[in-house]
Image (cartoon, rainbow, N blue to C red):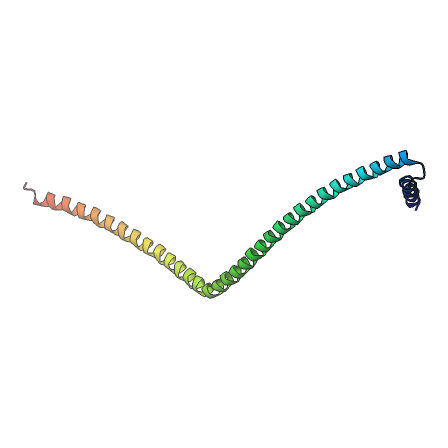
Length: 143
Protein backbone atom coordinates (compact mmCIF):
# COMPACT_ATOMS: atom_id res chain seq x y z
CA UNK A 1 0.00 0.00 0.00
CA UNK A 2 2.90 2.36 0.82
CA UNK A 3 4.47 1.64 -2.56
CA UNK A 4 1.25 2.58 -4.31
CA UNK A 5 1.03 5.84 -2.37
CA UNK A 6 4.66 6.67 -3.30
CA UNK A 7 3.92 5.91 -6.96
CA UNK A 8 0.80 8.11 -6.77
CA UNK A 9 2.82 10.99 -5.32
CA UNK A 10 5.49 10.59 -8.01
CA UNK A 11 2.90 10.56 -10.79
CA UNK A 12 1.15 13.63 -9.37
CA UNK A 13 4.47 15.50 -9.22
CA UNK A 14 5.26 14.53 -12.82
CA UNK A 15 1.75 15.57 -13.86
CA UNK A 16 2.19 18.95 -12.20
CA UNK A 17 5.51 19.48 -13.99
CA UNK A 18 3.98 18.47 -17.32
CA UNK A 19 1.04 20.82 -16.74
CA UNK A 20 3.46 23.75 -16.23
CA UNK A 21 2.94 24.31 -12.52
CA UNK A 22 6.67 25.05 -12.05
CA UNK A 23 7.22 27.14 -15.18
CA UNK A 24 8.14 26.43 -18.86
CA UNK A 25 11.75 25.23 -18.25
CA UNK A 26 10.92 22.32 -16.01
CA UNK A 27 7.90 21.59 -18.17
CA UNK A 28 10.08 21.16 -21.28
CA UNK A 29 12.55 18.97 -19.31
CA UNK A 30 9.70 16.89 -17.97
CA UNK A 31 8.25 16.43 -21.45
CA UNK A 32 11.65 15.40 -22.79
CA UNK A 33 12.12 12.95 -19.90
CA UNK A 34 8.62 11.57 -20.44
CA UNK A 35 9.30 11.17 -24.17
CA UNK A 36 12.58 9.36 -23.48
CA UNK A 37 10.85 7.12 -20.95
CA UNK A 38 8.15 6.31 -23.53
CA UNK A 39 10.79 5.57 -26.15
CA UNK A 40 12.62 3.27 -23.72
CA UNK A 41 9.31 1.55 -22.96
CA UNK A 42 8.68 1.16 -26.72
CA UNK A 43 12.10 -0.50 -27.14
CA UNK A 44 11.34 -2.81 -24.23
CA UNK A 45 7.95 -3.65 -25.73
CA UNK A 46 9.49 -4.43 -29.13
CA UNK A 47 12.05 -6.70 -27.43
CA UNK A 48 9.28 -8.35 -25.41
CA UNK A 49 7.25 -8.87 -28.60
CA UNK A 50 10.29 -10.46 -30.24
CA UNK A 51 10.79 -12.68 -27.20
CA UNK A 52 7.11 -13.67 -27.27
CA UNK A 53 7.41 -14.54 -30.98
CA UNK A 54 10.48 -16.69 -30.27
CA UNK A 55 8.58 -18.35 -27.44
CA UNK A 56 5.67 -19.09 -29.77
CA UNK A 57 8.02 -20.63 -32.32
CA UNK A 58 9.64 -22.79 -29.65
CA UNK A 59 6.24 -23.82 -28.31
CA UNK A 60 5.14 -24.80 -31.82
CA UNK A 61 8.30 -26.84 -32.29
CA UNK A 62 7.81 -28.58 -28.95
CA UNK A 63 4.18 -29.25 -29.88
CA UNK A 64 5.23 -30.84 -33.19
CA UNK A 65 7.84 -32.94 -31.38
CA UNK A 66 5.25 -34.10 -28.85
CA UNK A 67 2.83 -34.99 -31.67
CA UNK A 68 5.59 -37.01 -33.38
CA UNK A 69 6.43 -38.78 -30.12
CA UNK A 70 2.74 -39.57 -29.53
CA UNK A 71 2.51 -40.97 -33.03
CA UNK A 72 5.59 -43.13 -32.51
CA UNK A 73 4.32 -44.29 -29.14
CA UNK A 74 0.98 -45.29 -30.66
CA UNK A 75 2.77 -47.15 -33.46
CA UNK A 76 4.93 -48.94 -30.91
CA UNK A 77 1.90 -49.89 -28.84
CA UNK A 78 0.18 -51.27 -31.95
CA UNK A 79 3.30 -53.24 -32.88
CA UNK A 80 3.56 -54.57 -29.32
CA UNK A 81 -0.04 -55.81 -29.47
CA UNK A 82 0.68 -57.48 -32.83
CA UNK A 83 3.82 -59.18 -31.48
CA UNK A 84 1.95 -60.34 -28.37
CA UNK A 85 -0.74 -61.87 -30.58
CA UNK A 86 1.92 -63.59 -32.70
CA UNK A 87 3.52 -65.00 -29.54
CA UNK A 88 0.17 -66.36 -28.40
CA UNK A 89 -0.26 -68.10 -31.77
CA UNK A 90 3.34 -69.33 -31.94
CA UNK A 91 3.56 -70.39 -28.28
CA UNK A 92 2.23 -73.95 -28.80
CA UNK A 93 4.52 -74.36 -31.83
CA UNK A 94 7.55 -73.29 -29.78
CA UNK A 95 6.56 -75.76 -27.07
CA UNK A 96 6.17 -78.60 -29.59
CA UNK A 97 9.50 -77.75 -31.22
CA UNK A 98 11.11 -77.74 -27.78
CA UNK A 99 9.81 -81.27 -27.16
CA UNK A 100 11.03 -82.41 -30.58
CA UNK A 101 14.48 -80.90 -29.99
CA UNK A 102 14.67 -82.59 -26.59
CA UNK A 103 13.63 -85.96 -28.09
CA UNK A 104 16.14 -85.54 -30.94
CA UNK A 105 18.91 -84.78 -28.46
CA UNK A 106 18.07 -87.86 -26.41
CA UNK A 107 18.07 -89.97 -29.59
CA UNK A 108 21.41 -88.48 -30.66
CA UNK A 109 22.96 -89.34 -27.30
CA UNK A 110 21.57 -92.87 -27.51
CA UNK A 111 22.87 -93.33 -31.08
CA UNK A 112 26.31 -92.00 -30.12
CA UNK A 113 26.39 -94.61 -27.37
CA UNK A 114 25.41 -97.33 -29.84
CA UNK A 115 28.03 -96.11 -32.31
CA UNK A 116 30.69 -96.25 -29.60
CA UNK A 117 29.65 -99.83 -28.78
CA UNK A 118 29.92 -100.79 -32.46
CA UNK A 119 33.36 -99.16 -32.69
CA UNK A 120 34.59 -101.14 -29.68
CA UNK A 121 33.13 -104.35 -31.14
CA UNK A 122 34.70 -103.59 -34.53
CA UNK A 123 38.04 -102.91 -32.87
CA UNK A 124 37.80 -106.19 -30.98
CA UNK A 125 36.91 -108.07 -34.16
CA UNK A 126 39.87 -106.51 -35.98
CA UNK A 127 42.19 -107.56 -33.20
CA UNK A 128 40.77 -111.10 -33.28
CA UNK A 129 41.06 -111.21 -37.09
CA UNK A 130 44.70 -110.14 -36.84
CA UNK A 131 45.37 -112.96 -34.38
CA UNK A 132 43.63 -115.46 -36.65
CA UNK A 133 45.78 -114.35 -39.58
CA UNK A 134 48.90 -114.83 -37.51
CA UNK A 135 47.76 -118.34 -36.59
CA UNK A 136 46.88 -119.16 -40.17
CA UNK A 137 50.23 -117.88 -41.38
CA UNK A 138 51.97 -120.03 -38.77
CA UNK A 139 49.92 -123.10 -39.72
CA UNK A 140 50.45 -122.72 -43.44
CA UNK A 141 54.15 -122.14 -43.15
CA UNK A 142 56.09 -125.20 -44.24
CA UNK A 143 58.26 -126.80 -41.56
